[in-house]
Length: 408
Image (cartoon, rainbow, N blue to C red):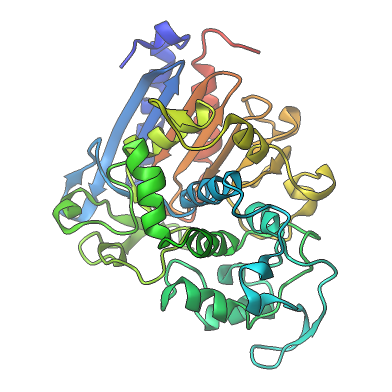
């Protein structure tokens, strides 16, 4: 690990990160654990490993602990599909029904309930780009906003806990109408699980095999996968949740978790387990323009396209979103092909850079890439929901406050 000063950071100010998390979140019992990695100018400048991996069993967090990364799976899945775009096997403007024929003519909800929906024709066909940028008309069951998401809950169509394989997942999904015509709004959804299906259908490889052979093994992400191997279970963290009464209680026991079993549906939207080291390798590949240690995953031009704002009309998320929930909740943000990004720094009211891109996971994990400052940050913990505390904004402030110099 480099000295922070060698890469333009302050050692003393980086120590504030550890002290802040310890005092604000760990000592008060708000978070069970925290791992932070700060990478700048080709060096790991700071790492913090704090708290408990499993409070019930008194296990401290370790540098190689395994975490449920939930929606931080989405950028990986998005990269996988863009690899196939680069190979000419699929195009962003392709209608989704070209790959899922049963979705041709999928209607838009007007009234009714599951089994008796009244629909109208979509004004535009759903295209591959709509899946990547969450403008597809699909939703999540936990949104609890409409009869459409009620049908998702009834049929257990959340991706992570679904059963029967990806083919059965998309077949069932095709029996439920869209919430809106594709391209008309932004809505956080199971769309990235459908992207995972497309990777499988177009490549001819099982989705998990594609990720392993085309991304994880080349990047040496040795601990990332859809379940925890039996010989690695001792490294798996416990996951907690904040109740409406403000209590932090165990949500997923690492000794009985469903993540100990190979799932029938490999959820491209939220199914992966990983480590801070592994995810930082993924982030370093992104920061390097699609390459790491001589291995190219995607072209720098492809990555540039992915990290542009693709929302219709150049709108911001807050202007186009129908979603009650996502990993991006403040103004000044756009959304690309698998990532949110800063499009108006002032409107975010947060320290950072124009063009930085990021996402997070349900258990409050997060990462961001700042190409301007040659910076990547990974944050791991295990507390749902991700909206419980403003730790991500606070972490951004603490990291940027540790800069001794700036490229812009």
